[in-house]
Length: 221
Image 1 (cartoon, rainbow, N blue to C red):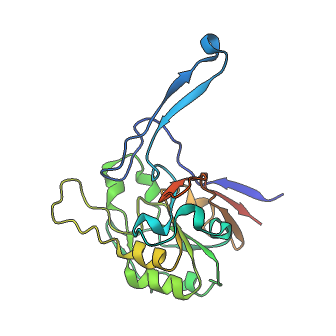
Image 2 (tube, one colour):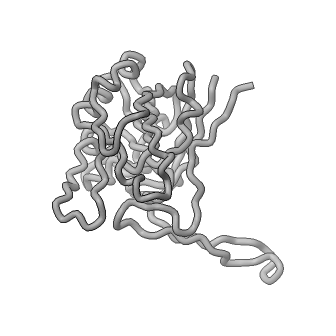
Image 3 (cartoon, rainbow, N blue to C red):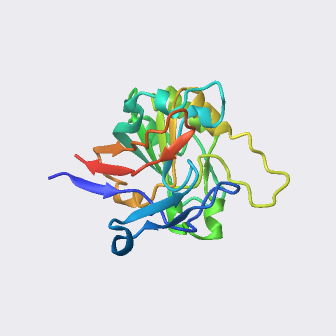
């Protein structure tokens, strides 16, 4: 039987979000003893938790979530193991070389930084990041979906940093190619070293959206 791996963070009240994004709140709306059924009320942004970015996230002229082909969200995945990098370290094409050699047209990439170990701490914002050159190398090798166990594929500014650059260059390279970015995955150590992995990142069906939460799941086949 294939082995399945849940690569998603739990959606809970007060969970970490990208600086400036809506806070997450999960609370009971209806209760079975009183109302006959249990129903939760959710308040969250489209980029909350483990989620995907559509190209529209960074450019109004680019495709929205519901305009993307379903194959962007599932398929054969190549795991790029870049664990062990220091805080705010760049992920260069050289570091991705083993994964780049394995990529085929339409492959999905799992970028394992190990930074999910810092989920829920201030250090989570100091994650490694994908250089524009590395993003271009992934696109050139055929990747159209890149999933990372960190808050972003680009550097995350520290709160209150007036000099922060929100240009999001890696986002623009990947999304500009019609690609999908998935962020805030967790537990990628479970799939590092596996030779044949399928990845599933199906989002909520939100018309015209910039992105949506996903249940990220991998399968060893």
